[in-house]
Image 1: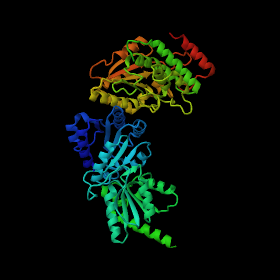
Image 2: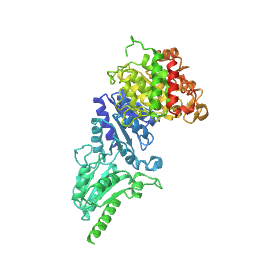
Image 3: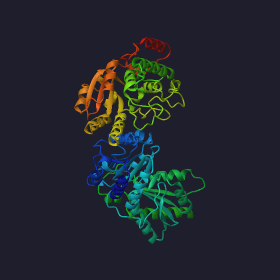
Image 4: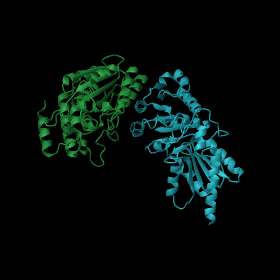
Length: 314
Length: 275
């Protein structure tokens, strides 16, 4: 996703001199071509995220499309008030980009576990929150946020994730992508956990459970219609995120379901408990230990559906 | 601003002070002390240095002024009104329900305000971004940013202070309203900043220190920027909190207290005597 993002941004920036990429002294090997070929559109703010974000707002208020780029929690939580006041309150055309969402840097320790970012960023007024699910979505999302005028947060994974979408996609900010159809349940996924979600759906199908799969790449504004349709047309909803179950996709979907009248759909949030992880490890290990592998998702969905069905029988 | 039509700076500073006292008194609002300490600086900036056009607040090539010490907003609103951005009568709605004139600098529906501030340490990074954008676009805009002394406790100020000289932003000017009193006491007792000018010098800024109430010095300081090609400018203005009203001067109390009733009458009477 990181590669898809930077390649697309590089291509766009060559066409549009307003685009400025500001990095927080990170992106070794990734941003190098951009830096070398477009020096007038590149800036290294150093290890200083507050200044990076404030400057991005200042540049955006001077006509630029400014992107801040760093890893994990650095471009979001470290400079949260700059994102809120300088960027959001001024509706500045700034795109905050974080690489390494979730447990991408799982072995690096709790400081690098970015599993509250979506919740926190979602709470900020006027900020679009986007987390593409694979490199195809990442490329489309990059183009979409540049075309959109206003503040955005983009959460990316790492480099080298598998491509989930078999062909071209119709990517629109705020519109979930329908990946698979089924009536037994809907699996709504955000970000890089998409592949495990799709695999879980395939496993479930083998067990005779047909699921609808939605890639909810835009957390805010949420595709409320897609959630309501899932509630009306399928038996249960599962949200799957490499993020705390507090405040992210699961919460956003629960908010919709809690306030809608006349539709009852059981909801299960599959994600990370709202606590510091007691251990560290590779992304694979961390997903495994948090029940986010395709096998674990399959099991949770199947078990939950059994409970839901038996509840109804009674 | 029409440079041919030179405003009388002491007169402008006096009107700013009168507005500050009336506004904070009527609103029963805090922060009159730090507004009065900045009045002469604001008068010199808007009366001499800044290239702006109140009829075109979004003119691309304008100079920009960022009031980073957002709590001293009454002084900014006053100088904007006096500079023609909006009628001075609008100042009467300061702090009132539904008014755009909030108790910290807010840009929405207030023409001429470049940046909403109120949380300290935000202005200089944004000003730095504006300065680098102007440089890269080849625009003549200069960015003036007024910060407080207490604000220098914020790390983000020093992040920008490191960045700007490295990038040779000589179109960036920071003014420090060094009135020596912050929220809970004297600056030297809370977190001593001295030697403040030397700190900025060491960071690579071209620095000038002066009495922030000696108008000829202030005027000269803001008119002569940049002092060195390729270096951002730092103006350390030694000021007096509450300047112009004897019973407010150098009193921490007037960071908070509003000039009500008799206090307002006395304050306005003293200000009327200012030359």
